[in-house]
Each structure stands twice: as C-alpha cells, then as structure tokens.
Amino acid sequence: MKLRLELAAAVAALVECCSAWPSDQPFRQIAIIGAGAAGSSAAYFLRNYTTHAGFHVNITLFEKTDRIGGRTLTVNPFNDLAQLFELGASIFVPVNHILNDSVTEFNLSTRAAETDSSSIIGIWDGDRFVFTLDRSQPSWWKGLKVALRYGLTSPWRAEQFTAATIAKFLRIYDAPFFPFPSLTQRAQDLGLDAFTGVTGEQVLKENKIGALYAHDVVQASTRVNYASNIAVLHGLHTLVSLAANGAIGVRGGNWQIFSEMARRSSAFLALNTTVVAIDKGEDAASDRPRYTLQTTSGIAPDDTTTYPVAFDNVIIATPYQFSGMSAGLGVLDSPIEAVPYVELHVTIFTSPSWFSPRFFGLRSSQKPPGLVLTTLASTDTPDSGVAGAGKAGFFSLSNIGKAINPKTLREENVYKVFSPEALTPDFLSRLLGSTVPETFTGEASPITWYHAHVFHSYPKAYPRVKFQDPVVGQGVYYTAGMESFISTMETNALMGKNVARLIVDDMLITRSSSGLERGGDGVAWEDKQRILN
Ligand SMILES: Cc1cc2nc3c(=O)[nH]c(=O)nc-3n(C[C@H](O)[C@H](O)[C@H](O)COP(=O)(O)OP(=O)(O)OC[C@H]3O[C@@H](n4cnc5c(N)ncnc54)[C@H](O)[C@@H]3O)c2cc1C
Ligand SMILES: *[C@@H]1O[C@H](CO)[C@@H](O)[C@H](O)[C@H]1NC(C)=O
Ligand SMILES: *[C@@H]1O[C@H](CO)[C@@H](O)[C@H](O)[C@H]1NC(C)=O
Ligand SMILES: *[C@@H]1O[C@H](CO)[C@@H](O)[C@H](O)[C@H]1NC(C)=O
Ligand SMILES: *[C@@H]1O[C@H](CO)[C@@H](O)[C@H](O)[C@H]1NC(C)=O
Ligand SMILES: *[C@@H]1O[C@H](CO)[C@@H](O)[C@H](O)[C@H]1NC(C)=O
Image (cartoon, rainbow, N blue to C red; front, side, top):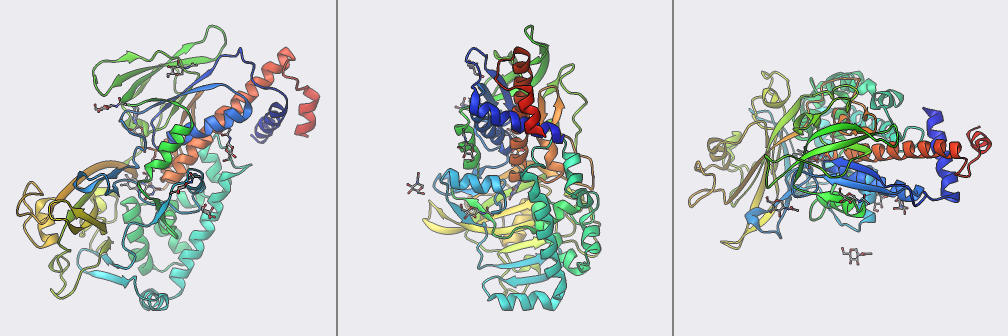
C-alpha cells in the first residue's frame, strides 16, 4: 500500500517535469453515475489531477434528475425564486475542508445556520420540555443554565472528546491516509473503528459523559441530524452530530458548490439520464475491460438505449440499492451491500401563526420555542426511524426564517419539520392551534404554502467496523460506502475525491509500466528506485 502510494507520487513528479501524455493516445473515458456531492466532487478532482499529470480524460456525468446536487437542494416558498430554503443538507462546518475551500475558490458567500440564533431552543420529550435555553441571553447565563441541569463536566467532556475525535478524522485528508482503497482499513488506521463499532450511548458512557446530558442534549442532536437515538446509532455518527461549531451554509443554496464543481470539471453532463445497467466488455486492443451503460431518459422512461461511449472507468456515486441499476456479469467483484436507510419526511411550510402553546402543554401566555428538538420519553423504546420517534412523534420542528406572502405582502414564518411519517392535517391543526384542511392550504387554512418531500436521507448507521470499500470491480468504483461511516456532504465529496485520486494513481502506474516496456517515458528504472528509497 505504502509502496504503491510512493510509486504513484514519484511517477507523478517525474511525469510532471518531463513529458505529456502522447497526443496520439486515446481519451480515457470515465463515467460518473450521480451528480450529488460525491459525483460532482469526483468529476472536479479527476479533472484537476489528470490535467496536472497530463492525461486526456473525457468525463461523462450521468444524472437522472435535471439538476445537480442530489440530496442537496432548495425549495422556494410561494414558488418565488427569490426566497429559498434548504430542503436537504443545510449546514456544514469550516473543518469540512473540501466544502470550505470550494466556497472560497468559487467565490460563494455563506450564511449562518438556518434557525434564528436569537430564538429559544427547547428539548421536548413528547410530554414536556426537559430543557430550554434562550439563545439571546449572554453566554455566562447560558453556561449557568446548562450547568444547573447537567453539571460542568459533561458538556465540557463532550466538547473535548468530540474535538479530539474530529482531529483524528481530519488526518484522512493527507498522505499517508489519503487516498484510501479500503475504508475499512482506513477506519482502523485512524482508530475510528473504536467509535463506529459501538453505540453512541456506549461511547458517551465510556468517556464519562453523564447519562442525563447524553439523553437530552446529545440525543436531541442525533435525532435532528440522523433521525436516530444514541442507543442504536454508532458512536462516530453520534459525535459528528455534536460537531456543529460554526455551522454555515451557502447563500442561495449549498447545491451551488456541486454545480460549480461539475461545471469546472468540463464533464459532459447527461442530465435527465438514468443509468439502468452496467455491462462489461473487453477492449480488443488491451486486456482492460470496457463498460457499456444502458440508459433511459426522463422523457421516455421505458425506452432503454445503449450509451454510445464505452467507458474505461465507472464511478457509481449514489446509494446502489436505490439506483435502479443492475450490474452485468463480472462488473462487480462481489455484490454491493444494501444497508438500512432512514426514510425521512421533510416538510417546509409557511404560516402567519406561531406554534400553539397548548400543543406543548404550556399556558396560553407562554410562547413555545422557535427550535424544538426532541428526545425519548422514559417509556419509549430507542430505535431509529418510525420505531424510534417515540412519544414526540417527530425529530425536530423549527422556525427557519421568514418569507413574504405575495398575496398579503406580509412577512410570515417558515417552518421545517423532520418526521418519520408524513404530517397529517390533524397534527398540524394541533401544532398551529387552528384547523388545517385535508388539502393543507386553502382559504381558511393557517398554512399558506406547503411542501413535503420524502428522502432516503442517510443510513441508520448501526454499529459496524466493516464498510463497503470504494473499489468494487476492475476500474469500477463506489462512493456511498462512506455513508455508513459518516454521512455528510463533505464526507461524500471526500469519497468522490478519493476515488478520483485512486483512478489517477492507477493511470500513473499503468503509464510508467508501459513506458518502461517501451523505454519511452524517459523514466529510468534506477531513477524510480532512487526516489523510492
Ligand atoms: C433532509 C436531509 C438533511 C441533511 N442534512 C445535512 C446537513 O445539514 N449537512 C450535511 O453535510 N449533510 C446532510 N445530509 C446528508 C447529505 O445530504 C448527504 O450525505 C449527501 O448530500 C449525499 O451526497 P451523494 O452525492 O453521496 O448522494 P446524492 O446526493 O443522493 O446524489 C446521488 C445522485 O445520483 C442520482 N442518481 C441516482 N440513481 C441514478 C441512476 N440510476 N442514474 C443516474 N443518476 C442517478 C440522484 O438523482 C442524485 O442526484 C442531509 C440529508 C438529508 C436528506
Ligand atoms: C488543482 O487544485 C489545486 C488546489 O486547489 C489548484 O491550485 C490547481 O490550480 C488545480 N489545478 C488544475 C489543473 O485544475
Ligand atoms: C466524450 O463523451 C461525450 C458523451 O459522453 C461524447 O459525446 C464525446 O464524443 C466524447 N469525446 C471524446 C473526445 O471522446
Ligand atoms: C429534463 O426534463 C424536464 C422535464 O421532463 C425538462 O423540463 C428539462 O428541460 C429537461 N432537461 C434537460 C437538460 O434535458
Ligand atoms: C474556511 O474558509 C475561510 C474563508 O476562506 C477561512 O478563513 C478559514 O480559515 C477556513 N477554515 C478552515 C478550518 O479551514
Ligand atoms: C465575488 O463575489 C462578489 C459578490 O458576492 C463580487 O462582488 C466579486 O466581484 C466576486 N469576485 C470575483 C473574483 O469574482
């Protein structure tokens, strides 16, 4: 492994100085299936690495929808393009190097987290608020309020421990930990399998973080971030949920990062194009396989056509189990494992009303918090998804901003709800304290605009130490194994970058060995030995 890396680096250095890819060499054809964070990042870094090394590559980015971003997308209240909110991935943190650097490089501007930082945050267990915090208060006051319920050490230890774990993870960006042909191996190398192999509850307990703090605060975070509870979610996802310091998003939508990556990659964009099958063929001129893809288009979903280009590499950049793709004989070395995913309902709606105090059992003079996170009631069984929502029945409710209703020209509240099932008019009527009709919106409804979407949002991330590795066949790569390790925009983008590096290293090794045979690339064997030693 180490040798392979060094060889690639050495060859890259020599090649950079001395030779360009012969212009009579054909383009290497690379297919990327899925234009979310992973696929766009793979395209972007492939272009960067291959330009640097003097290779000709032709990248085709297949995307079944007509937009780039995948689970990173926005919606527009009242269908007004000037007003927008994140429906999918909404925040990232500055230590997310790929995203943070892209923002600078692409000259995008950022905003703070979505909720109004002056609003009150409450943790609701379905019976009562176990904790509330007025975020507009001075920090000493907030610290005191936290300390009164949870003590001083638990919050402090949780923060220290999260920071230490993130620091371990951050080593993955650089050699010798980057790139990584095996995520399982890398998780071990970084000592992170110790956290993925056990539940969040176990990790917190081992690190002497109090049970009450774990139950209320940590679990409220894992529920809003991963729709799961600490007794079932693995320790690394639990800690990632706590690592929200300095959270930001891109003004105008996080998808712009990925759209810009795709644009800068100069990849050929096959939008509205669903890949339904990958088949393996042989290249007569070499012993390398070439892959053909069967596609359908959004316009003619029943019409399968063979894509006219045959590919040297295929990057599958979407959870395979939901892709609707089949793989022909010999494409995959072994089947790609299906993992349980959370089915998450995300609902965004507008209303002039605030949450009803009665819904939360408050007095009518008490204003409910603008950000309601949830935890389990004492009688609930911990699980994930529907089974784990508990008495609260939902994961979070928040006032994410304001929007102008074009009919009244008044400012209204915009709300976002994460729940394991579709919201019902009955639930919304109780939440807003007035009748919501079956149609959700309409003349007498307190809801003026309504949008609901169901995602396979992220894996349930039960404890595990083995992950689907990125190399799944000869020249065939897969990114979504990352999601069972850490599911975020950044980590999926990192996996896209990793796969790009693995492909280019492979090209460098192929070039150097064929160069040696021909004696043509000007790199003497002695030189390589010298560099390697
Ligand atoms: C509600 C929600 C909130 C989240 N919040 C955050 C957050 O705040 N911060 C964060 O970092 N992460 C968050 N995440 C997670 C984050 O969105 C994902 O981890 C990340 O966006 C996944 O990127 P991806 O490229 O791996 O997959 P996707 O974004 O799912 O991209 C896959 C793409 O492949 C396409 N595709 C699928 N099948 C085919 C096919 N057969 N042919 C062609 N194209 C195909 C899809 O249309 C899609 O565009 C959230 C996710 C959800 C759902
Ligand atoms: C590749 O990325 C690096 C780092 O962002 C940048 O400095 C360099 O100019 C890029 N090279 C190409 C060829 O895109
Ligand atoms: C690159 O791929 C696109 C479509 O996938 C194809 O139309 C084009 O001819 C290819 N270009 C080269 C130089 O191979
Ligand atoms: C994709 O399909 C949609 C609807 O079927 C259409 O409006 C859009 O123009 C198409 N986009 C592309 C790039 O083909
Ligand atoms: C994130 O980007 C900002 C703006 O370019 C930069 O100032 C900051 O140092 C970066 N943060 C990290 C942790 O890299
Ligand atoms: C970056 O964006 C700002 C507006 O957000 C604009 O004023 C500025 O000219 C841009 N800079 C570059 C180099 O494009």
